[in-house]
Length: 541
Image (cartoon, rainbow, N blue to C red):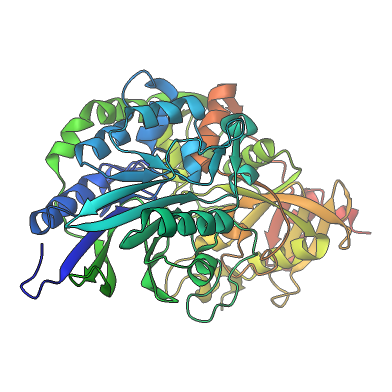
């Protein structure tokens, strides 16, 4: 579409971190939500009605992350990948390889790439034998309204720190920043595009305004450096961090559209007839109150039906009781459900200490039969796992932070600190630990409530170092756990916890509900006796 003043308007739409979300439902209870590719499709078609020549790109983390894609990966690999089917139907121009594309192995990934009617781009994901981009094409050139557009695909090179070695065998991940510099220079010299778009499955390592680091500069996210150090980029599409942002850095238009299809990214580039860029703008088109595209639902109906049946099919059994009847009580003494989740984390990570949370007060726990729906109902966040190397001081500080969750009301009874309820409930910011023994005494001031802390039956050495597994949100310091921020990451485990829990149960079939009573919370003097009954305080000196 060219305006009367001969201004050329180029429209770029893009998705990122869809994570297998198609239907606008929460699989834990099938309640309606405002996300999913079925809603994105409606908005794409509306935008195409306005501009039939727009570009449509996916920025990675497409084929993993929902019960539907997990079910596909486990049981339906002989069929066309549902996410690829939909992107083909919507006529995507390109997709970028994200880190979660590798989670189910190279066979599934290569099959998805081969089924696609569009190229998958990743200039820095290299075949270790040929030295060429593993997925074939580092970039594509599109001629749109007489404008020559280059789209360069880049993937976070931090993948080997997360992924199973067998899932990336034969692949080398070259430095994101350096490869972006190389290919941007190549494109400017050889292809001479009018507009250069870099679609980067990665995010920003620094504050967009101040430039101050917002994380340890490992190379996982290099979006800020790309904008500052790479010449010639006009638009940087980002993802990976699940952030919601638009703006400019050093003249580069930047954008990131949340995750699960909550928003569609839109960038408009205006050029004059000499193909000089006059203006760039970006916005997020939210899916609130957007109708679903019924064609999308029909194309994946069989996948969805089979997923729903599977969600309600028992995948294992519990001997004992993992049900939740009193959420506050669970946070005052060891409970089989919490111990079980910590055991899963320790087993997957291969460490001896773990922490986790009861995320809200609606979790019901597990009955005698466990279905996948039970798992996603109780573990409600798309967390992955991180192993941090912590000092005993860090562990004690984290326990003190958790202990601040409690207060004592006027009647002398245990209550929740109002700061964990207002302005929104933050029950997920209270952690419970396995692998250590401890008592939290709420009669004492905040910061002095850890009265017992042992490891393997002896007082924990505060100067020693310990490897601890926790969810990725907590490992980044989320919930004001600043003692974890910037600590050495020993290992990242990128698979969603719901999948890890499911795999653990499926492998063992039957799980024993156990509670070793390694910790408890006291708030009355007579409860010291309760602490003694757990075999903790008697080891004091």
